[in-house]
Every structure is written in structure tokens, then in C-alpha cells.
Length: 256
Ligand SMILES: NC(=O)c1ccc[n+]([C@@H]2O[C@H](COP(=O)([O-])OP(=O)(O)OC[C@H]3O[C@@H](n4cnc5c(N)ncnc54)[C@H](O)[C@@H]3O)[C@@H](O)[C@H]2O)c1
Image 1: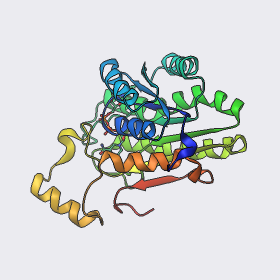
Image 2: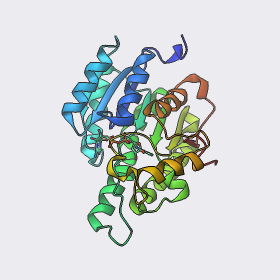
Image 3: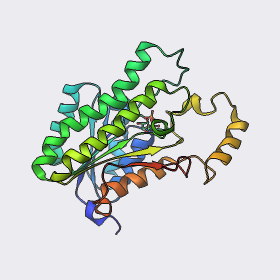
């Protein structure tokens, strides 16, 4: 079986109650990992945990608010006591205030930075001591192409995702000696609830479809599985020599 090395290992996936995080949780479970589904929505977390368990591995729903330091610490302690170890942390929880800079409120700014940057810091901070002790770990942050190319109407989101990319690089430099890798995955557009009404933006459906054909060399936006497959690779032994990278998974939309 491919990814045999991951069998029996443990992953935490934040924001795994729906969208990309759910697909990541199910994909990791599909190769035999035990998975903690950590989300601020306890109902969806339980539902996804049920789907993970149906694959024959342990699926643990954990209620977490990644913006709260105590909650992030509690998440790690719960996973350690229930699943015994943590091999992989996937920082996936995210939010976006899709607004013109001049319409962005202070609250929008803090909300986006709190989840997309502080959340990544707080969950990484909570899990790293355990990974150092074991001389092993993978930290994978689901960032965004927005951080690289600064899409319009994403001021707070792009700033926060850019910060998260930089944080992964610093962790890669500081923690490499403990056999811990840290990378970011930068998707372009992905079909999920987060995209929601922002999907067609100012363009409307037809023009948006044209735009995608022209700007995405592979001619389509991502399915959640495209992002999950890249996450699986980075979690595995096959990626043991890859660290500090910001890898776009976007059909060629951004080429660096
Ligand atoms: N959908 C896209 O087009 C796209 C593109 C690039 C990057 N991304 C990134 O991928 C990640 C997943 O996005 P998605 O589209 O699946 O989003 P989504 O809105 O469908 O799901 C986000 C999940 O995160 C959870 N969450 C939000 N705030 C939280 C918090 N404070 N604590 C714990 N959980 C919280 C939500 O409850 C939800 O289950 C995000 O980081 C997003 O920025 C998405």
C-alpha cells in the first residue's frame, strides 16, 4: 500500500469539520492514520469523526478555538491522552473577510489575523514541545496563493497567510535539528463553503469561468482532494527532505 509509513500514526487536522480539512482528515485516515478532527463546530467535528471511524481507524472529535491559547493547549493534551502521540499537525482552520480595503472593519482585520496567523502560531506552539521530545514531527499549514500574489479584497487574509508562510520557514530553520519539518500549502481557488458567495466576485459566473480557463493552466479550480493529496505527501516519508517550502497546489495558477 502507498504511504504504508503513515499507518498507525496520529494527525491533528484543525478546521476539519468541513471543506478542505474534512477531505484531509478522510485522506489521512484512508492510509491508516488515526485522526483528531479539531474544529470550533462540535457538530460537524463529530460527523467527520464518525466518517473517519468508518474507515477502521481512530477518529477523535475535539472542540477547539484555534485563536484561544488555552483551547489550543487543551486540544493537544486531549489528543495525547486519547491517541497517545502526535506525528502530524495540519493547521487548516481558516476564515476570510472578502472585502475592499476601504470597507474592511477593524473586527474583520482582527478576525482574519486571529484565525489564519495567530491560530497557526498557537497550535504549532502547543504541539512542538511534544514533537521535540520525540525528535519527529510534521507541521503543515494550509495557507493560500493570496499570500503570494495579493488578490484584491483579501487585505487581512493575505497579510495573515503571508505571516503564516514566514512562520513555517522559521519553524523549518529552528526545528530541523529535531527532525521536524514545517511547510505551507498554498491553494488557489478550491470548491468549498469558504469560497461561498465570493466565488464569482465582481465578474459573474460566465466571466469567472472564462477567467479560470485562461489563468489556470489545468483549466479548472481545485477539488478539496487536490489539496488533501499534497498534504498526504508532505505528511509522509516521501517528503522527509522537504521543509520550509510554500507549495502552490493550484493547477499552475501561481508558478513560484
Ligand atoms: N476554499 C478556498 O478557495 C481556499 C483557497 C486557499 C486557501 N484556503 C484555505 O484552506 C483552509 C480551509 O478552507 P475551507 O475552504 O475548507 O474553509 P471552510 O470555511 O469550508 O472550513 C473552515 C473550517 O474551519 C473551522 N474554523 C474556523 N475558525 C475556527 C477556529 N477559530 N477554531 C477552530 N476551527 C475553526 C470552521 O468551523 C470550518 O469547519 C483555510 O485555511 C483557507 O484559508 C481555502
